[in-house]
Length: 251
Image (cartoon, rainbow, N blue to C red; front, side, top):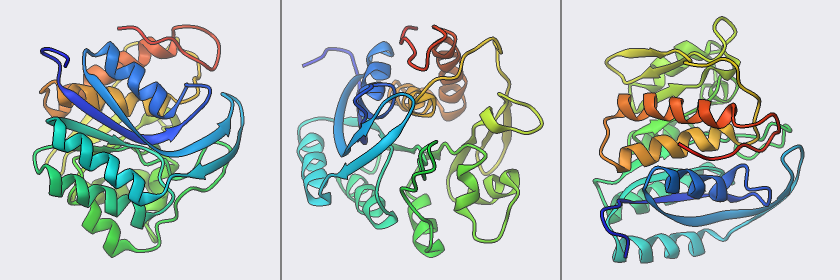
């Protein structure tokens, strides 16, 4: 058993390129001195440049895996990535809270891939709100957050509204006015997280890496603001690690 390391779980898909999904998350956890477990929600066929297909994992299998891990270890934080439906996500979140009320939950709102393959459609706002109240942080970008509202089209207003239920880190990669500036909405305050380095290169799975870095920092006991600030430093190092779509993990 690892000594002096907290435990965290990534619940996400398996990307063979290891740029995104559970493989990228585990790399990130390890770099933060957090021991990572992984529960696979789906096997994908993809490269760092193109998405082809996904084969979803049966929900009961996922839930049984979580029950075994929580039974044997104290899980400080969980990152949830790609899921096939809102009901699937709901079952995962509710089981986590049943097993441990103290575990922090970060939902990386992967609503569709960058190749426009749609994974989840938010068609029940009541269920969504019920879910958000049990989640500590969501990490949408400017395109993804639009799918969290059926009427509002302004990303900042949606983030502010959603933060009444859970914290929102609105990622700034698509920020039309200030590229790279993230905004953390806590429900009480809003913090602008400006980039420390703009000389970076686009990477496959950067959203996964950022959310798993935040999860790792929460597992280490950092408060939400510090966890997001330090994760931003980590992701910038990752983005400038090389010129290809696949980045190198190092602190």
